[in-house]
Length: 126
Picture 1 (spheres, rainbow, N blue to C red):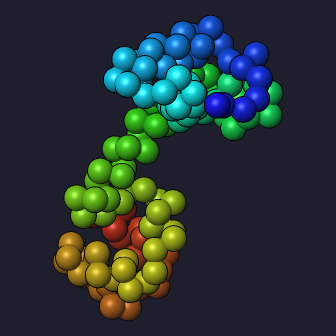
Picture 2 (cartoon, rainbow, N blue to C red):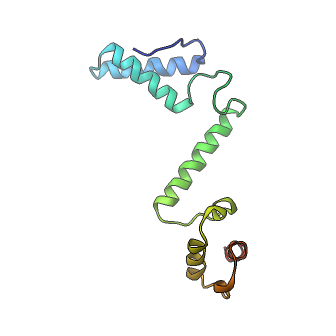
Picture 3 (cartoon, rainbow, N blue to C red):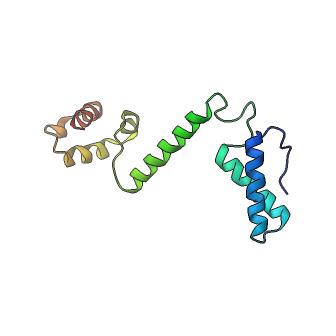
């Protein structure tokens, strides 16, 4: 059985949990297990009840959705072996990995470049 009060959840979240719970019960899962799974699903999808102190509390739902979508897009690109091309991720890479990427893009003068110069050259090379 799920713990805690459900007062902080929105009406939409409560309806969603009820619908999911009914679906599990229809599949033959016990009432307690169905309720626990339903609330776990709602929590995973929406980050829990809309309460003060929660993660991203000042971020609108549309921005949360956009961030999740962007995160998923980057994860897929990483799994496909595509290099990240944002400045922040290049800053966290090692000089060796930057050198390897520069070698693949055939950037001239790379062997004498320092890390910042490599990052700039890779940024310009696209």
